[in-house]
Image 1 (cartoon, rainbow, N blue to C red):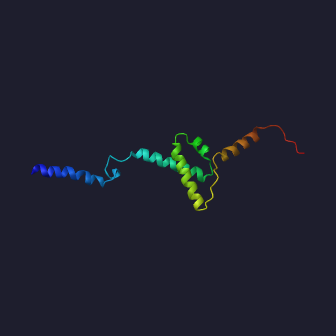
Image 2: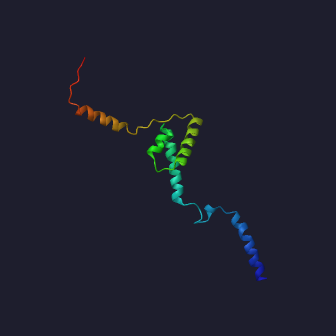
Image 3: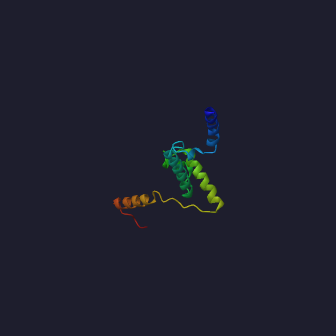
Length: 116
């Protein structure tokens, strides 16, 4: 009889575990750092699309982000923006630097400008 209960427990264990997801069992789910890295890469892609930035520019600005996940985020945001008729917001990245450089160049240029 003791073997019967042991056999029953061994046979019942896979049935019980089949109903569990790996995320429910501590230590058996995906690495939280990997999940965060994937979510961040998708967010980068979505932000690039919303900023009207092309994929190539997005890849260049974020070289460490996985390209496939950046593309997935960009594509998801593109579908969302098209479905909801949302216009993107142009990026202001580098615009303040360009203005500052133009002012510096104008101040450093000692040549008089002719008014004709």
